[in-house]
Amino acid sequence: MKFSTSLRSGSVRWAAPVILFLTGLYYVVGEKAPLASSYHYAPSIVAEPLQTLYALAYATAAALACWESGGLRNARILALAPARSRFRIAANTLAPVLVLSWAVLLIPAAISLARSATVPSLDSLRLPLAGMVLCVAHAILGFAVGCWIPRIIGTPIVAVADWVTVAFTRAVLPYWPRHVSGQFDSIGFGEVPDFVTIGVPILLAGGVAAGLMILWLPRGWLALRVMVAAVVAVGGVLGAQREASEWSATAPLTAGHVAMKCTGSAPRVCVPEFNARYLAQFQRDTANALHTLRGAGATSASPRLITDGYVDGRLQKSSTDAEWHMVLTGPLQSGDAVYQVMIRSLHFRCDQVPARSAHSAWLWAAKKTGQEKQYLKRRQAEGRDPVAQKLEKQVQADVALILAEQRAEQAEWIRHTLDTCEAKTP
Image (cartoon, rainbow, N blue to C red):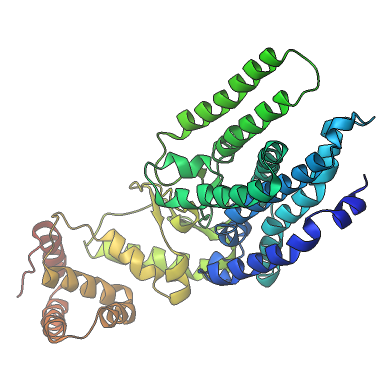
């Protein structure tokens, strides 16, 4: 049977409008993060709309496959021993079903890429391709059910059971059911799911599907086929569960998959390419600010490299004295990046810093480095209640007195403030 014939005579003809309507509805309702927040990072843009659509795609594949196999069973086509193998007949019948279930995954991803004018990358294809493979496995499962249960009964049961089993894994503990279900999570900027993350659900669903296909072999001892099929299916399930049992809520991923632009030295600064227009000025201002603070005795910090930790997603790297990893994407665009470096360079040596001491040190350093505007903007963002206003007046008065002192006295004051967390008021 040709694909066009299967399409005209199969269930996809009447199911497609309903499924595609639901796909559009899920896409519109499920869109939470604005596309601009992904900065044209294709894996994030592709993964975001798919979060709510995996269960629909798998349920579509399983339910319609059940309906199609039930039709073959009612027509006794598989029992007529045709010249073509039963696997080829099943493949021809399931082809339109798979195309529809794949469309559930591919159309929303393509729309998001087009809306954001983003070119897809190889990394962005991992989740859609994994979902497509899992659709095949779910279709095989649904086809097997339809071979044994009347399709009028089996199809709605398979549709609901498949959707619920996948969708509700996000709300259960422990975490491993969601990781083996094929319900993948969103992807942060710079992140890419590890191959083991997409391999585990394929191992589980693929093991069960392979076991069912072994049972369906036309030759061989039935007992041997049952034994081999059970080993393959149980091995896939247990292997997937064992691999994912120790994972946290976030499945394994890698980070830093973003093209970077670097410039300067002492420190060398690296940011994503889309922020390259800020890079030269930020590097100069950062070097000047750190030089000023070292000369004023406020810090000994002299990082060799400053990188934008935003590209590391949830896998934030720890900083060292020589290499600082800071989230700079937002501050660069808002003009607060140098201020953040200034704050990072002031090291208080106690855990609980009194607000007056902290604000005095920050304002003094901001005035020294030309970041007073950013300091005041941060204070305004925190609120202007009477307590905050009183504190700010005290801080302004303290810093005005300190700035009137000689350079040596100012250096002694900032060291004392950072060491004891108590502001020394002259």
